[in-house]
Amino acid sequence: MPWFVLYTKSRNEKQVAAKLKERGIEVYCPLTKTKRRWSDRTKWVEEPLFRSYCFVNLDEHERARVFGIPGIVRYLFWLNKPAVVRNDEIGAIKRLLNEFDHSQIRVESFSPNDRVTIGSGSFSDTTGSVIGQQGNQLAILLDALQVVVRVDLIQTLVLS
Image (cartoon, rainbow, N blue to C red; front, side, top):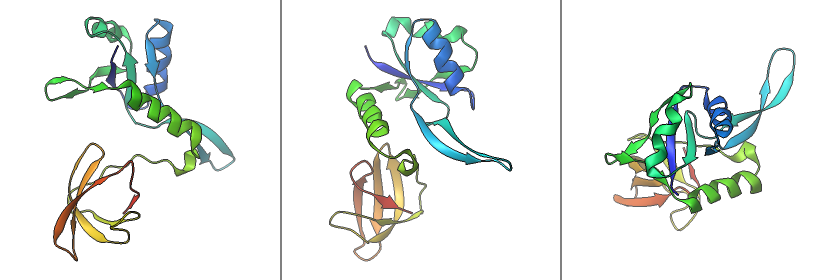
């Protein structure tokens, strides 16, 4: 069964995931542990890795089962079809959260004309401008060489 991406109301991800589990629907809401500081205390809290998104594992014909739950807005679509995440991608997210320090994990998106420096690989320490981003692929115009390179954000560290 494919994993579909649900778009939720802001700050409703954990509640939506709990309600989906109560209904017997397989759901995954990746959470990171971050340290939050208030005026009187510091506390570790779990926050969604992807704001306003949950993943549900359903057959195509069962997708409507989720809509009775408060906090769900809609499914995420890509190319006029419901966005599907492969099992190996969900597994990779789970491994990432289990194997790495959560304080080092950030989800970032880049805008055209953002200045970035490539942090590893053959173009290490080369600066350029973002021309576009498509998923994990970032297109960067390198200033010194006047060429466009595509960088895989999963394999290459990019610093802004």
